[in-house]
Length: 90
Image 1 (cartoon, rainbow, N blue to C red):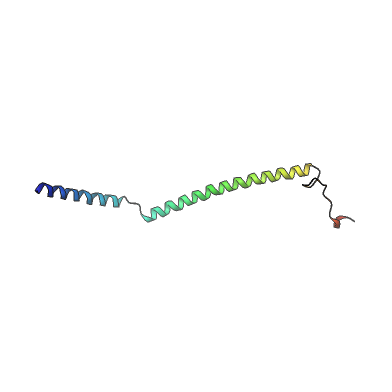
Image 2: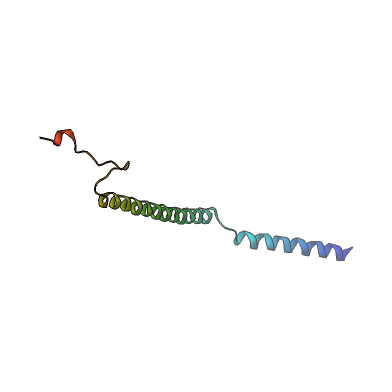
């Protein structure tokens, strides 16, 4: 009977020690918030880079279309020659 009491006290002591040790190593709410802000910043940076790359590709495509239109002699998208505005004629 005495041996069981000693074992019970020892187990309780170990439990208390582990609870204190775990609490000391626990992450604070401030640590979690700082990590969250860091991750959000990295995500927005990565997203911004992807958006910038997409915009650069779109600009390159548009430049190529403009160059093609300029080199084709000023023809419109339907193949007709562009007419000068009425106000430009004397």
